[in-house]
Image (cartoon, rainbow, N blue to C red):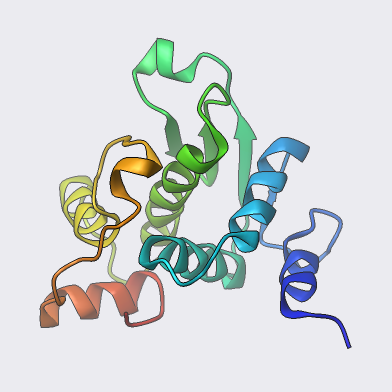
Length: 163
């Protein structure tokens, strides 16, 4: 019997016909690396839940590396039309938060009750500790205050889970 990590990695393989997160080799390696990190950390655990929620959607989202994105747009990542672009110039751990952030935008776009961009960023800040790029070392100990009833409903609606 294989271990849980092997099972999760097989679900995220771009070769798997059932995979809903697809992408170039470097981007998929980032997703795999996120599963190999310690899940006893709130943020890493939440990143994991977000990736699983995206992978469980019937819609597909593609992730690719976008060299120069930060220089052109001043952002570590970007989401539009079921496409996520991540600037490869950042350290791997720092890209995890960017991928999670952009996946929340994807999940919101396919949600039954989508939030406005401002509402999404407010929710992302509550959930992930920042709505803009912040190095992982600066947020790794983040744990949000208890979610309000409305935030819990939003979490359930977008990610399909409660914290």
